[in-house]
Length: 520
Picture 1 (spheres, rainbow, N blue to C red):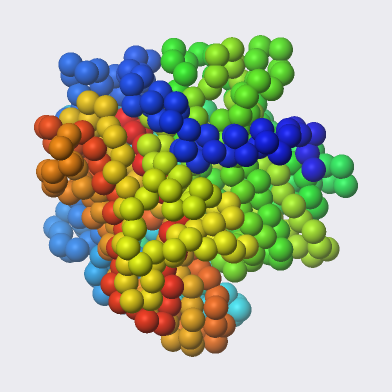
Picture 2 (cartoon, rainbow, N blue to C red):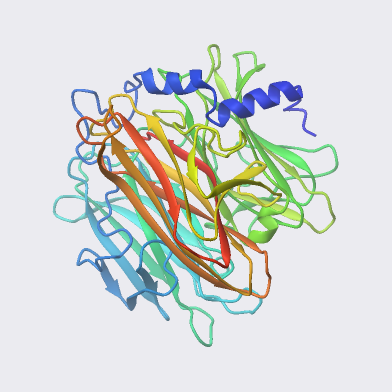
């Protein structure tokens, strides 16, 4: 469809395999390349950050900890996103905030993420009010010295259709900053019953590099971006129904949108974390590519090939977020071209795109076969199967855990991981098989192993319990989970990524696009 990506089918399959983590030489490159130099964080092998972890205290509100300062905010166990508790802001104006110590954190940007939804039916004219999220830098006397991030979630964005995982990056921490003040502020909503906004799984973690994308939120029209279509206008700016702030891009025609990012300034050939949020109506499909260009602007390789099939976004009925990690740029690459190709087959269909991130990271995706395109190879499993459908999270396949429970796990090799933390990103799908579906509990763990395979302890434990009531049997809803591990202990040589579920005899749980990588 696009003039930017016209390779043979065999080359496409090769690139998909590489981006899917199957290529052993890529994993070897990720495990054995020392790529500390040039990172903002400056953590060397002889001087590690002491707090390269999730800096938020009680991020899922399980303790209802004193670190959270609240006004008109309650803690509830109703349909929590992660764990058993979540924060409920409202009804009406509400505030949730925490002052976070930056001791042991060097001057670097922070990865910021949280999950939110509202108990509002989007078919009505009601809304839960706006949500403003702000991260401020404070000195040692708690005086304001700068703004690290401020984002607006519009009043019409959050509803009960889908839980949205928001992903952003702050500015670099100032040298004299001692604390980060994180504040969620909810405005007055338009609802006769309940205009609460629910917040869960809050993450604020150091990253080695800043976002390289220009105008990733499309607030400044298409500045930095180029739109291309053979069938009329495609990808123009819009200021209605954005994910964050005012702007996003929308297309009602098939076409491509791309941006060229200069990577020649990087001292090493780093992989990149690509993040974005997308919404679609109708049988729309999105293909995502990262191509490596030489100094003459000629494509010399591909770092990522991903696709979102044509039923996934329509089922979601709201924005869905994604994270991918590219392979390292090949020799001679000076530019990364990020390409979004939309297939919009019918009049009245559309696709929206917002909040694009492109950030150098310190490893490839260490998971092999993360999207199960190569059957269940590289995975150990019990009561798990591979399914092929047009509504999986990414690609053509996903892994399904049985109604009676099941397990899926993979051990990944780590290179000198002691003291290092890792990012885990995973799509969890809930497929409804009856009017009221009970999915049991899904548990996502990262377990540290020594070189003999003995367990040294848990680095991460995410718990998802979900029940759905809907008249649409066989509907599918994807949720994006993100976690930051604790630092790997002394003697760690591997990490076991383990996904299990308990008995839930009326709904399937599906797994897709598992990402495990070092970001600092």
